[in-house]
Amino acid sequence: MQGDTTIKPLPTRLDALAFQVKAALFRLGRARRNLVDRDAKRFARANALADAPVVAESRTKLWTEASDAERALLVGKIHNLRVALRRIDGVEIPAGAIFSFWAHIGRPTRLAGYVAGRELREGCVIPSVGGGLCQLSNALYDAALKAGFDIVERHAHSQVIPGSLAEIGRDATVFWNYVDLRLRAGVAFRIEADMDAEHLTLRFRALAAAGEAMALAPIAAKGGKGPNNCLSCNVVQCFRNVAPAARAVGQTAFLLDGFVPEFDGYVKAVRREGDALFVPLDGKRFGKPNYAWTTAGFTTVRTSTLATLLRAWKSRRLADQGAARQHALLDSAERLARSYARRTSHEATHLVVAQNLLPYLWRDGHLNGRSFDVLMTALPMEVLQQRLDRAAARHPGSKTLADFRADPALVAAEAAALERARKIVTVHSDIAALFPMKAAQLDWIVPAASKTVVAFSGKPRSKPRVVFPAATLARKGAHELREALAGLDVTLVLTGADHEGADFWQGFEVERRKAGPGLLAGAAAIVLPALVEHNPRALLRALGAGVPVVASRECGIPRRPGVATVPAGDAAALRAVLVGILFGEPSPLAKAA
Image (cartoon, rainbow, N blue to C red; front, side, top):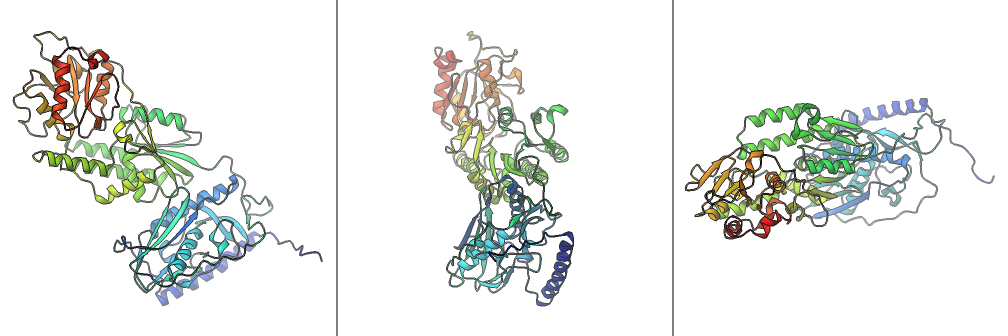
């Protein structure tokens, strides 16, 4: 004979049924042993070892195939890993206790959030709910060997999948619940599991070494092309054969909240066929301009009506300033993020996320294995709180600068997500400056002048009107403006409540107006020397109307004709600019406006 020409018979439905029957019997036997032995315990997340040294790490690629046919199963695999990582990330195992893979992961079912991924069974890679979890068990086994842990139970794969740890003998196959991976160490250890868009990373932390690490032992490469794949083997006679997908797998999901006109234009420019849009409400349909996103051109549009209505109802019951309001807004963002996450398809391999949703999506693991961009409208919470702390030290008598701080865990989650983000999309120049390597800065949209705006006449009998387009808050620069205007013969136009005290503007000639088109009538200048400002729309309206703008860099409007930039917190510089505009010869600023 010139060689073995035996052709392996194709699997049949009867073969599959027999496999399921045998598997069920094995599962029952393992369940009985688990009850008797009581060694398959589930351990909780903890933080006792969060700062312990890393004693071992395993890092493997998520994308190991290039063909479109393979991509469908790989996307499913990555989603299944995303679900499983939530069960073990942060788990801490006591010294001498046994870690069981299945005790922590649980049975992978659709009800538990799993989808069809790739599973190696009887020589073929087949679609299977929960498929792909072996990459996680491989990583656990690999790291356990590096850390010198005891391997209580481990099973090798029957075949090697190219690109996996099986190529170097570091694999551990698992199959619910009787094919398990079990580890034990002489010291307490912590598991940390994470995915970026390209890699799965698994770490063990411990306060002391568990034992002598097992040296990496490469094995001889196996010949052949690896197992058949039900999405690409073209054996159409097999009942497991899967027809090629009608469209490319993978989409972008846009997870948005409040309407921002500049972001609406950006989304329209970058969306592609097949992408999904998530918005709180269809604002154009229901006449809600705060949610008036463009929905045309998306294959899928989903809304979260109940979460949005609940937020609106709660916001009406809150004061317009204070810690209670800020915490309520955070709670509403968390509710919306969870609503979106539940309905985001596992095929969404890239996300574009509104900033206020970001820390919750990160914390709950929904960004694992995905690339993502952030639509950023505010300073990172960490930076914001640092600025507020510095301002509170300068103005210890302020009633508002120290009334809100976010949960440190939430602040850390946002910071970690921003570090991982592929791109930061923002209009705000001060925010863009924080991310010089990955910020995509958009241009502000300056609205056309309103017909109700009347320029300041400059007649001797008329006092200059200086508009302060914000509530009286220290973070808006109220203290600096009060100091800068002291002794000047001007009328101060105010729009909001005096949160710094009822007598804050005592001694000034004050005119109260509502925010809107009439705010700028007769204005000589609009002034916002804010320490923190995320939404300078009133300044943009003034630019469109030709009213001189005096603002701090923190307002986020880059240098341009019509805008004078002053350092935040510098009342002397602010006064000098205002005196020049209001009482001096026409300045270059006024001419440019």
